[in-house]
Length: 177
Image 1: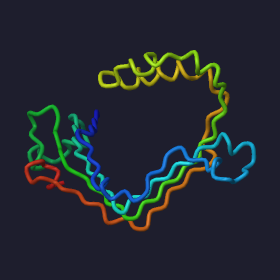
Image 2: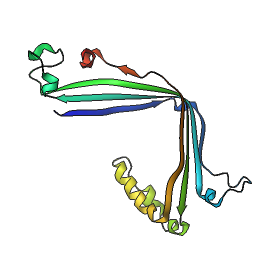
Image 3: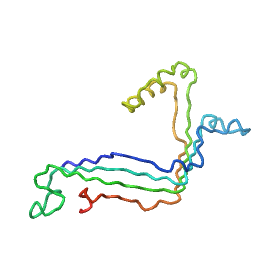
Image 4: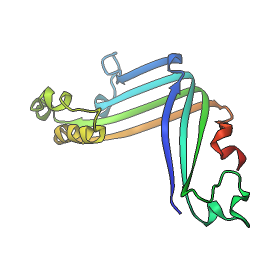
């Protein structure tokens, strides 16, 4: 049996509740004398008071025993014996409160190799039509300059996860399962 699950829409609400957003800080120039590796470590933080993720999901169930099995085919309300598949749709939502994300990224690169990269090689990419290909091509331009690039720490703290919400339209057929 063939099952297709498609995420048709993804929304993030609550980005206006960001209380801290700091990128590429290393505190090296603030009088501290960190270890040499700290010169190459960038710290990133983002705090959000409340954030909600909403997803619209479509499920396509192709004909198969587990979909159409019943003593008489019409006994399951959403199954029509003449259909080759059944389309179900619903919305799923998840709300998180007081989310704190931190990351430290260690990078060791050769600045002289970055000097050879032209801005057009990075900015001239069409990220709208094929974002993965554009990202791949951009990273091919920058990769030779990097000897190391990794997360030295990664943190996520969530104070509260509210009960997930499923919104199922009556007409979708999923409500009767």
